[in-house]
Amino acid sequence: MAKLARDYKSQKDKYLTIPYFFRIGNIGFSNEEFLKEGLLSVIERELGKKIKSEIADNFDDIVKKLVLVVSEGLGEVSEKTGKKILLFIDGMDEKCRYGFHFLDIIGEICSKTGNARVVWLIAGRNEKYLEDKIKALKNKANVMEPEFLFPSGLSPLDEESIRLIFYKSFERLKYRMMEKDRFENDIYTNEFLQIIQKKSKGLPLFIKMLVEDIKKGNWKLDKLNDLPEGLENYYKRLLSQIQVSDVGTILTPILCFLALAKKPLTEKELNFLLSENEIKKLKTRLIIN
Image 1 (cartoon, rainbow, N blue to C red):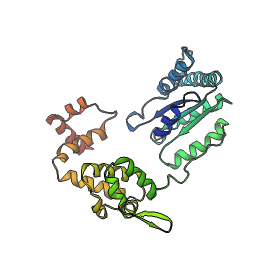
Image 2 (cartoon, helix red, strand yellow):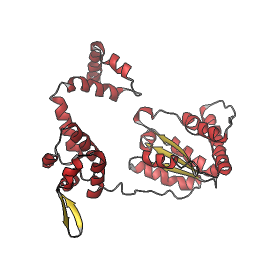
Image 3 (cartoon, one colour):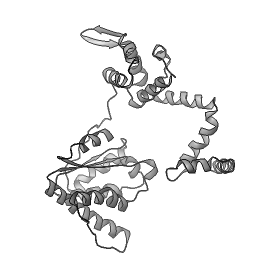
């Protein structure tokens, strides 16, 4: 999603690209903040003027007025520049886990922008509740039928895709991999790639972690048969390594603090929390919970 947004952002003469990626740490980012900081500020920059919205007495009215202002602004930008407007929203499953108001707002903006050349690209984990809600937007907001790009999820990476990842990740090591290439039945096969594809089940995250481990010297190509089967077992292996090292002494409380935190923590805050006194408080809290 990030790469797609980057690619379109580089084509500034054709597209106005507005990306926003929700993360676990900022799911509390309000609809008002998103409309102001995520959309309105970009519209103002594109039009070269400040846009004022009427003052409202309560939060719901504020959001409604902002939706109207943003919708009109998107239409004006599209008409003035002739650009197609692409809005990239990632992490939607995280945002909607706490309510669907955000998706309702998207539906309202879609219905108000009318024929403006505005396309929303929404990404998130394949949660059934999210899919149903997005489908419902068509009737509620009178917008085009949403198109699900990967209705069955992303397909696993094949051997050639894994080959490209390894070739881009390594300069010298790729030549050792090439030594295992065999030309059979008009196609190239490779023992290393076959093992990696089988062990990873084509999951990009598994392969990314493996690449990093090979760079650090934790795995060697001639030991790939010893790789864990699947991503879950890869994680289990990493956790077991932490438990038998000094890293676990400091990493365990860090992970606990990050899990309990209501917002992303800075390095300074972590240093304070890792003091002996705060560690004792953490253990007490975990026992109570």
